[in-house]
Image 1 (tube, rainbow, N blue to C red):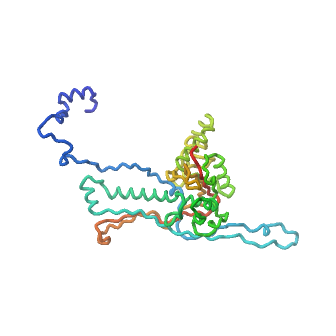
Image 2 (cartoon, rainbow, N blue to C red):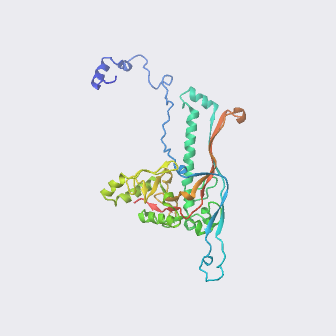
Image 3 (cartoon, rainbow, N blue to C red):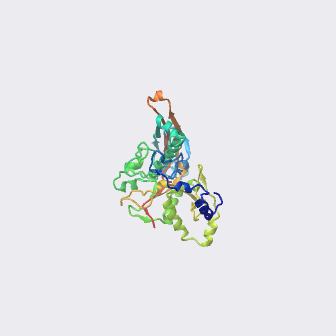
Length: 382
């Protein structure tokens, strides 16, 4: 009873005031919970999710429609000889035009299907099943679809190309030298659009990679600063840069910075800057160098569960995942078919006692500039 003390409860129990003690009385042919005809396990309709359902990497990237499958890139300016001073009355210098290259992408179609038999749908409502089965499975399929797209976009590329999956950000940020040096890999792995240049080691097609050649090292601010400097020197704008990392990397960076902050700086930073929104996804709140590490050098930080796994290197792996610096001005998702729910519920058409469903997204990860993208790898926990 509500508001009853435990002492009152005990007194009422032994005096029969709660009508509970009778349940423990001795009677002929006592009933036990082992009698399956009387007792069955009931699980109820609720399902409590034990998984991290947050998937933001796909959301971070802006979306453009698939109006064309290829594009041209400017890879070199005109030569010095065509841009020089001319003496009075003199002839023009050497005539030249800039170098262009053609890049082609292929549409990838990502499908997350599931099937429900007619019997399962009926019994879910009649017995101790998951009530509202159709709604539950649709929600879970949508979450899984987003989860695995994020996993594709952040996976390590060792061991082969992306195939029918979306390309990965780690391949966008990689360069020829890094891939060629990795044990068991070939340089062609980095050539994500099969254009030859990246596989041949053309410098204009290289991302900036700060690695240690298979020797793991502790993260330092010098490493971060060098990666950011490269992006800025190659034409990136601070407004378009973000840092993407796993939660272990975020913890290491936070501890690295706060270890060198005074209490006064810490208090000032902690109260200052709001999170930045990028395509509907918010970074962690706070200012540069704060405890929640919302920003570093005015660049917002985003953490994802999908970058927890170490990248493969010549030593067989690292103990901490990579950190990526992404230039979102030159990096986006080109979408041919936005995420669509597909349903085939006509049993006559299916010719089976089941209904088929799927979520489908078609497009590809597009990088129109590589040398402003950065990858920090070969890291270990301090």
